[in-house]
Image 1 (tube, rainbow, N blue to C red):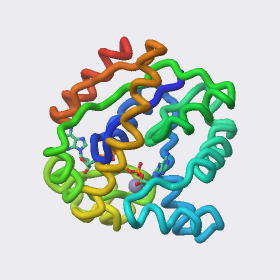
Image 2: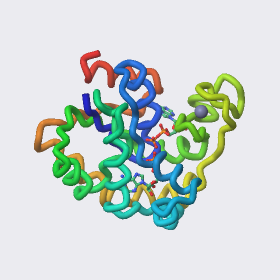
Image 3: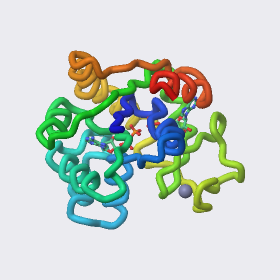
Length: 209
Ligand code: ADP
Ligand code: ADP
Ligand code: ZN
């Protein structure tokens, strides 16, 4: 099973990807997490990416496509995966085609822009990739990841002005990807304005789980 979790920044892609991983036993491939790891390690690709993520801009397609193709060629992706945050442009969607990858379903989490700011301002993340919210999805122990016990942090690009820029970029460059998959009959839109659990139920229903 190869799935794409699509949606605006803060729509809940990472959160829902975790639920799908557990149900389907396939990994999440998050280009955002791959990029943040590359930045923290100071790799060449990370250095290239940093200037873009800090501004809320997209990292150039060729840089992200290379990171993605390296990652999905690893053994744990043999039975499928959930793509979180990729593709984010039409050329990235075309790059998946060029790699000969057939996507089964594109789940688009539809969340009103007005809800995004509160989700982002309360978001706390773990270096392992897990995402929490101070109010809507707190960890069992304050400031500590349920999954791995590491300390939670706030992302530098989650400040309000950068979030506004990321939303603008989403509407301009990323939203057109929906029509790309709709034409192929792959697009399923899910209401993401509800609670984490209610949204998970809608996704499982859409996937026939
Ligand atoms: P969010 O989960 O809030 O949507 P991500 O963690 O997916 O954010 O991405 C964080 C940042 O990493 C993006 O704002 C962008 O700069 C960069 N990025 C992630 N995925 C891509 C991609 N597919 N193409 C270009 N840039 C990307
Ligand atoms: P994305 O990967 O799309 O950027 P995240 O999964 O990181 O989004 O979610 C963004 C923030 O919103 C996080 O703080 C997360 O805990 C919170 N969140 C996710 N889903 C919901 C929901 N259905 N209702 C309220 N908050 C949510
Ligand atoms: Zn963790």
